Image 1 (cartoon, helix red, strand yellow):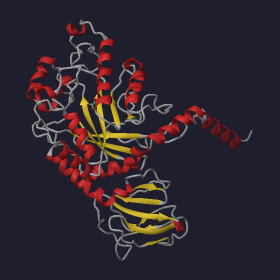
Image 2 (cartoon, helix red, strand yellow):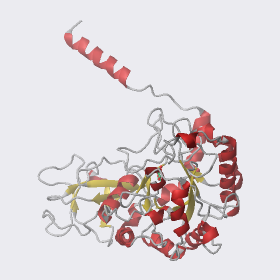
Image 3 (cartoon, rainbow, N blue to C red):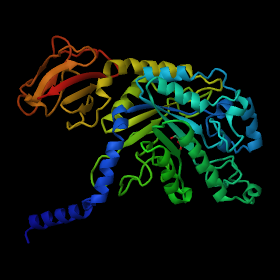
Image 4 (cartoon, helix red, strand yellow):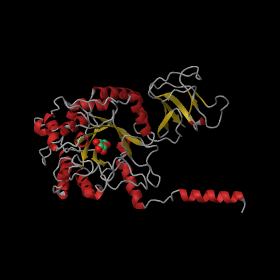
Length: 459
Ligand code: GLC
């Protein structure tokens, strides 16, 4: 054989071995996939939500993991519970903050890992309503957010660092306490309690749009939680609800051989945005949502001043949408019940951008155009949104657009923008150059320093 033939054969072989065999999905899978895409349609349109981590840990002001991180006993933790009286809690103010940031839904911690209930559960006394004039904070949250026209969801921790039948496994605060480990833990009893509380939430609080379970680890996953029964229970009361995937996974997503989740409707990458949109193993895009903190913590943390800039948040949101994903952005109210002023300020700036550019977010997803150097694309049908995020010298090139472009405008004002298909002799080749101002080849300060959006209606 000639050298080149051998080379070609081996390239072919190596490629064939490296490429995953592209199976095709069964009809049942396709049916389940189509139903999933239908049920998640509103959520994939809305794209931007608020996560709220609020609980007695706000008093310690060292994040929602303080009990575990500092290995506190329930007795030691009690001083925070006793002091927790969020007198300035104003659900309507929270709802306005979310809405004016351009968020369309919100998810509140009904119970976090510490086990302290923010709702008036009949199954425990370990709850805020006992010391808060009987007020049910979760109900107030739901009413206020619904009144602002926002969709509502509840976060519920399937882990419980307080319940006597929950063993000291995983990151339990008493994980190193051998005496504690000798106690008898009745797992069925815990499951009964946990399922019972979920039933209270889905039965007694009106229509919920999202239920956000957190989280699985090691063998504490899926069947261990009786996930199938739990999901059936949820659906019995809330047929249209969306569930996250953490009855089965840890903080994120399955990486190999991904299919749509058995127990949930969307993947939950945490504190990071995937390099590419998430696909199932057949190549279909599947719903996902990055959850992200505004500083470095979910629960209120007094000394954490590591705030992300509004610009970074806008970029993160656009990044998610450009890959068919959502962003669930967190706030951690303080012990008095107020969203930190710094968070409110950031959200206000994000809201200003959303007012001008929300059209390039809602109902949008990945583009058929390849990501450019100067930013990202989002797309909705024939509308391409070019997100010009980084100042450039000269024009930006919407490579591949060529003569397919119709009307070109600056989204924030609707003003027509100068464009041309040829520049520097680069005619044809699918080039389409856009700039702002006059003369058009000059470098200009971008009108919006976070992200200047150019809308191109394609023919
Ligand atoms: C993690 C943490 C938790 C936080 C959650 C948000 O699983 O345990 O504190 O609520 O992620 O995604």
